[in-house]
Length: 377
Image 1 (cartoon, rainbow, N blue to C red):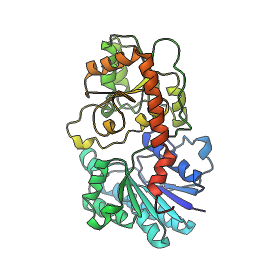
Image 2: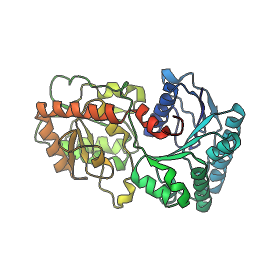
Image 3: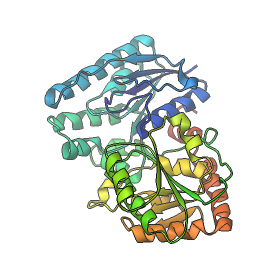
Image 4: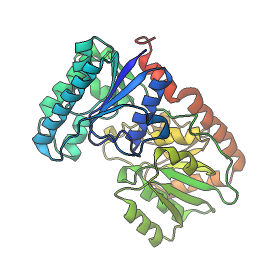
């Protein structure tokens, strides 16, 4: 029996929340449990939206007090040490940690218990913190990253740019342990449904922030030449602005607000196609993400109209599982959606191809199998 310590010391990621990061955490936990592992979660922010199938997961919490600057960074390090100490006492036989700034929990546990450890890196957090927030002890953050990678049996990155970022910051001897494994989707929870009667519905799912490009999607709806409905699932800082933009442009848009992960299948049900209108970025290195929403769209059998940026072209086969368009171009986005909205046979073929892509190559169980291959097997 594997007794897995799953660690998430990042106070910005609620384990049981509706953010994409929260979905990722929950799905990896489910896949470990499907292997027969006994999972205990060690975190700083548990969240409150606990799915029914995860209510029995033990959760050890060490909360980080609110604050900024050096004090908060030190509090994260202290939380990591405390959570690691608890996992050591509990007797974990394997460790899986979502990379967090200033957490060396994996290194502490693997050293004390001599067990395998898996470090999951989703973003270049040091760069993000320095550029978008504040980072007092960058040297300390880098030292912790190096310690974690050195201790891990395998470091798993969600995209090649993230893997390059890690490799550039660790000793050459550890580069061979860095593996690229893109995100996945729960293909049992999200399944294709029949399109609803009437005009085709285009859906977007995600937090309403500028880097998701929803403004471009609303502008595309306003200039569309065919009739299709637009459903935006999610909320966030841009929510009010986007609602006002839709009204100003006379674009009829259904805003559902934020929904919990277990309601995503219902939000996708009946839709005809999906949009991932990521904007053009000034710095191409910012496009390191492995978009959960696209895998979810594919699992639901939805053709995806997406921007040709970052990792997206490596997921969507243009003309097979969806259409790729220039980013930040409402006219191009509208034209592509118009084409598919008026082509039910093409949508049907793309639907089957998208579902096959998700089920054959991107299930969460398959993701975890690639992560642990050769170490637990």
